[in-house]
Image (cartoon, rainbow, N blue to C red; front, side):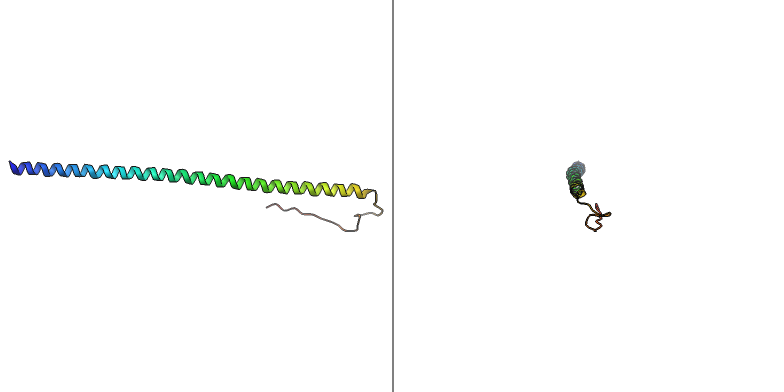
Length: 105
């Protein structure tokens, strides 16, 4: 009778320990998944911020190039209208052929 009680107690202890190990493992896995989700959220936010920053930078560079082209065109046109009255010979006004190439990128 005592032996049977000890066997039942030992078996019960094994079952309790197994349950406890499963519970601890489940908690550990839940913590791991929460940490992974937080990492993924932060990584996505970082990538999104970087993408917006690069987009803003590209748009700003394009805007500056466009403004520079407008300035060059406006000055060139002003120069043309100012020089038109003093033109005496054919070709360019001062004998210099001026070509401007704008490269974006």
